[in-house]
Image (cartoon, rainbow, N blue to C red; front, side, top):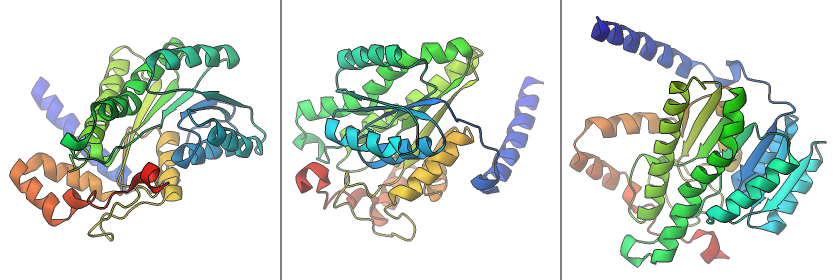
Length: 303
């Protein structure tokens, strides 16, 4: 009986999911976040800055974390024009001690962090054996370990009132390994696994009022992946920042669990789970996915 019921629920759930996927996000009901406090890591530039501005337009108060004080202040100035409160902090997201220290300062300054966006990330863009140990370590510290420490710092208050939202900015590289991105892919696979495990854990504890969302986009035109090329841009384009932020905001406001961009990645991920690994590698080679990093420059080298 249990297995029969599981089959019925799976079929109904799949049909419901497909129907929901076909409904434009603009038509889905959205939660009201006005007056809530949003913490964004890596807020000094790129997606972090754009998300902070979008939340400010919705009437949210902002907490901006970044190691780049100058960029963080620039974001704060833009956010303040929308009449909301802003707190800025310099924080080294590769340091657990610094994260906990700044988290304590933040909790003294703001009553509650309602929405936590783990956005900060770095990329080395080197083949595995050419990547120095310290750079691999820093990639893991910033791209995933920081998620552990920020969530540990702010999740207890969310669980206490059974309300909140944790967003992990991961990557399509969190579902598929790519040549030249061993450390980056490992960190993003970890971010995807962390989000899924945390969501299941919260539900098992009866804290389903605390939502989690993991964002998995293809390459984004932020400068971070400067030089990356895509063989078939009409299928897998380099994404523009405004488009990505539009979709991220829709996902957060509708409590979507997983967002992949572009949408074809849902299909690609499904195919990967069904075909032999050797065939998937062949597909990645033919489509040029495994060569996307060949001309990588990156923000640091470009500057």
